[in-house]
Every structure is written in structure tokens, then in C-alpha cells.
Amino acid sequence: MSRYKTMKHAKYRISYHLIFSVKFRRKLLEPIKDDIIASFRRAESMQKSWSIRIAETDRDHVHIFIDATPHDRPSEIVHSLKQTSTYDMWQKHHDYLTHFFWKEHLLWTRGYFCSTIGDVSEETLQRYIENQG
Image (cartoon, rainbow, N blue to C red; front, side, top):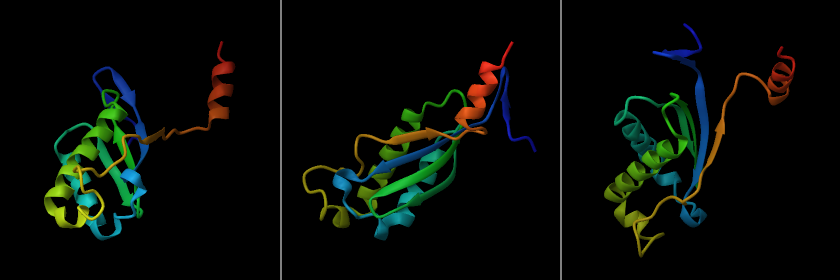
């Protein structure tokens, strides 16, 4: 099986490492971590292009390893994950979450970290490009 995927006019391998944190870095994920991961899987199932390779929680943030297509924007992936999981967690754990957030139905910070996962190091790629022609 090839490491690369193909579309009509593209051959690609795109993977992202995403990290986002609980609002105010509240350490609240431990008791609800299985439901958070299930909610991420639900968000994944609602679309057809990107897929979660692995997702794990810490007490106040999550790490997600995702495979994507050239049409997927990381910001839209993060938005989908955050929106679905916030809705699901407030539906399932309302009483628990009101101990941490009493004014609004919040869960995640606005920001996130995204890094691409490549096959080669920056130095190798730079040498390859510099030695063209």
C-alpha cells in the first residue's frame, strides 16, 4: 500500500498534529476524556475527507494526529472538532461543566497549535531545493 493518496490531479500525503486547550486551562478533561474522544470521532464521521489517526487528552489539553486532503483547511478541522465536542459535552456533562464555566457554555480556548508532519527534515528539503537545476 502506498504512503501517498491520490485524487484526480494530485498525489499527496498531508498530516497534521493539532493541539488545543481547555478555556482558562481548567484541568477538567480526565473524567470526560472517553466522551471527548468519542465526540471527536463523531465529528470525523460527519465529513468524508479528513480522518483521525490518534487522539489523546491530558488534563487540560488534547493532541490529535490527523490525515487530510489538499482541500481540508486545518482551521476548519479544528472548528469542527471544537464545535462538535463542546456541544456534545454540554449535552452529556452539563452538571459537571457548570462547576468550571457558569456564564457560558464554553470548553475550548479560541486558539490552537498546528504542525504539519513531513517525510523529511527541513535541512534535507532545503538542500534538495537548493541543488535543483
